[in-house]
Image (cartoon, rainbow, N blue to C red):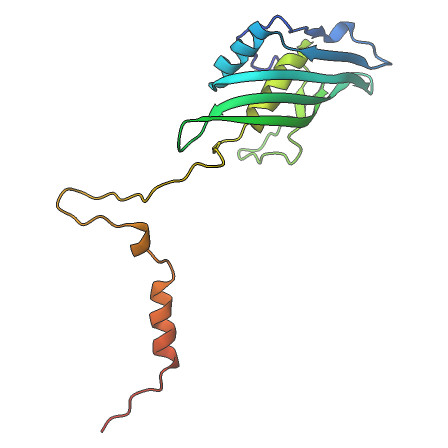
Length: 192
């Protein structure tokens, strides 16, 4: 079995399941609520101001003889810096998480490989840690450009020394088209 890259941070709420000991017939349920010490570690790992709450509840279900499926709901509240004002921005994240672990993960043999459409497939590891799965889902769900509702970007003007700055009002992407339309709609000039 291939072992995926694991989160190097160990969390108190982490409870990895040994795949060899999972029931082959019934689901194994989990309900994880991170304590304060883990919330701080999570924020550090995600490189954000804070994780205010983290709850991941779901189950690991056998699929066939050797495969498993992890399904669950992640609910987290995070604090990030606004990209404009750097003020705190709070976001509540609710994500449905689905991962299918395959004992025999198909390995493409071509020189060029396309990314599969189903991004929920993973090779079956020796242990499944729902906390790490939830952290991966949380990192993918974070707003990439958090913005406070009242944050406004002032006029940006950049130029080399001695050059008049080009400002937003000077840039009109369709200004050239107006001249073209005008020249096409005017009757052609006739020679005298």
